[in-house]
Length: 139
Image 1 (cartoon, rainbow, N blue to C red):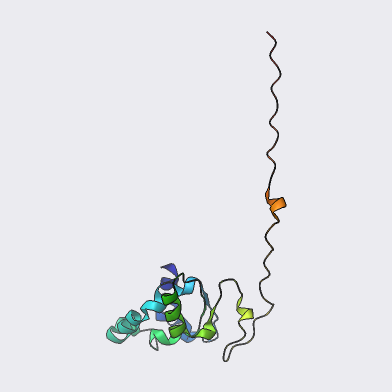
Image 2: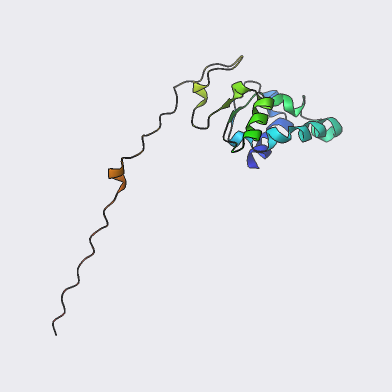
């Protein structure tokens, strides 16, 4: 929910219109916004207060951010690709620099995120600390 609210604020407040070079990365497929962008477009057309700072239909801005593909549902992922474009979607385990630059975008600095390999099973086992032994009680 927070992802959709944050993106909606950036769209409806005109931030994405005023800052065309701003690069965003939206987690979790952008929340519910990509699948319900029709509601935002309807509000933009029907309500003057919704369109006051937003120069274009909200759906036109969904091709700007990058989205990770962690949607947990194939139907949601298909809708995300439909509204945001395949070039703007990537695996949640990569960085934007591995996607390559999109049209009109500069390549990101650096390379892909390097992940630490999982620890070996030998290192995962930890020995329990030795409990101190109580002195023997003499009768």
